[in-house]
Image (cartoon, rainbow, N blue to C red; front, side):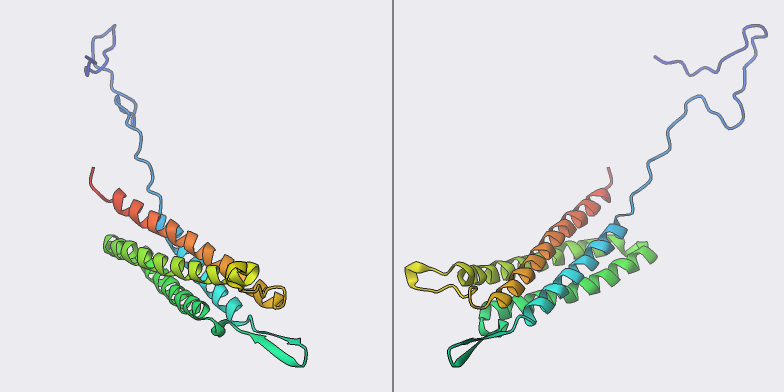
Length: 199
């Protein structure tokens, strides 16, 4: 067993006091807590920016081409899948900006952090499901437009509406990025709640 006796001067036999500010059993200082709410604010703002970008790109995807004497027009609201996509990403963008403000408020009043983290964990999963389903739905329709389907005689249209398809592809890429950000937010909220469980 390690001795806890204080050292003594071998000549006088008296206790030797440690220097001022020193201790015999030095304990390292506890590690500084990482402020994860700063990361949370940044991710939520990026979700807002990615969702807004996705919506703006797809709603400006209108293109008109002429095949003979008749003009052909392609717009996002010609497809129910793209309408659902716009609505879902609009909801995600609104959610992103509201939760960014809420997360900022926690940095000013940390007393509400645990309760807010629990709400974030629930709602982040819900919005992630909404964005992922909208991205998958719109992506399926976009793939048919790009590749077509010979088995059911669906023609590909991206060879005609090239600008329209580029807008759709950019919008889908932005929404996929928003989905990845939401996955990170779910992990971050869960990890932050785990850290608050007493060991």
